[in-house]
Image (cartoon, rainbow, N blue to C red; front, side, top):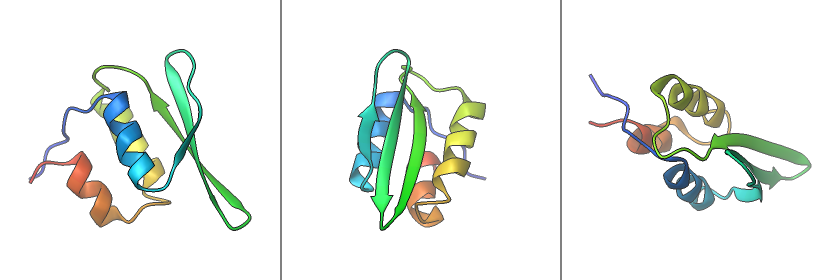
Length: 80
């Protein structure tokens, strides 16, 4: 069974930028990433922690799954 990887906020930002998201706001301990598709705005909140808690990581995964194909997310968020 695959396990969640240990990821940092900076690593997630790099991944989401490769997926077409842009950093809109990044002050303090969290940042907001957006992607504009047509008239819709897709938003993700990412904590800027060195190590993101597993529950938080699962919540980010679920939130991102609405915008990014699950196959792409699984490769990055889970081990094989």
